[in-house]
Length: 463
Ligand SMILES: [Zn+2]
Image 1 (cartoon, rainbow, N blue to C red):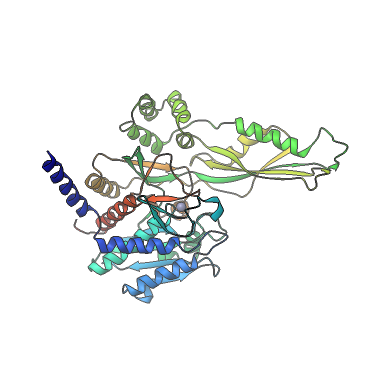
Image 2: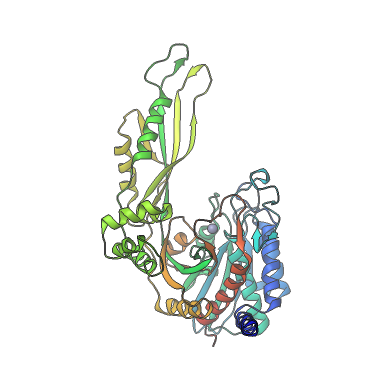
């Protein structure tokens, strides 16, 4: 019995050894990842330029000619890096994109044992700001291209790695800047990007998501103005009270539930792996049942967000002195809009919900909806084959992100984009943008194996 167990353990180690990248390549990806995490590239308190420069140095050292390395951006602190690995040109290029900027992180907001800008390895996890969003994929793209070069692989299309700035909301969105100023550098048949991880439930891998659509962002400003006066003589007509009531009405307001082609498929696929009473409801969404959507939305906040446009108050301002009646009270309401809901529909819905002519409801800037990318058969076939080989039993599901990524700009510019990473995380434990952001070490290396195989397959490598 013990012998059998031992044999099984050895066999599975051998099988796993074949699936994981060679030790030297794992070390390369690890070192690139660590180097990226330890550069503070937060949108307002850091800079992406040293990340771009450090990666350019690695590509040079790996033998990439200077003419295939582009470094630049709109301002000195917001550089992007684009590197081209030449193929035979039989097919149009494939773009491998990741952003290198991260959301701000304060040392004091994190647990004492972690520093957001120090790469910490603990209990099978890598900790640091950007370990999940999006430096894991950025590091894997770098390591993959360098590995192809070392192996002398000649792809049947150019492979382009683009590491971009300001995806997290700065004023110089890197991918948009590249599209506006150097489209030739990143123009591609299609792109792979963040936005589609893998889901685990209680440590068991269940689904690998391929993001083909995303919600878009609208910021709405609520504003109550008043002529004010001395606080010793209060009036019922008060800007802060008007705003507070308007926000309370918004907190009770819900956009209609709806499903589109992507989310219907997503929930129908999920029904195959979930357990418990929710399964029937998940399946019924695939059939278009509104009652089922309602039950599923109530089950889990992320599912709710996948089934409707959502708007939530995120920032407040108001008043100018403790002894004065407020002349201004304002709030920012952040909306995540379904791809087929129009900006006008969202604005008008909030105006109707607020229903107070003392509170102005206006869109902070104009936005446009961007339709999703079609499911490419070659891509889906490759993803399914590799998923079956690395994670048997895991299903591949098309998905719609509730957040926004660089994919929106790419899709808007005619480059179909697919969020696929093979980076698995526990459902409900996403710490992207939050405290003690982390990535499972095993997820990182398995993703490296997955993406190496995927990019190779999509560029003519015989596996
Ligand atoms: Zn991201």
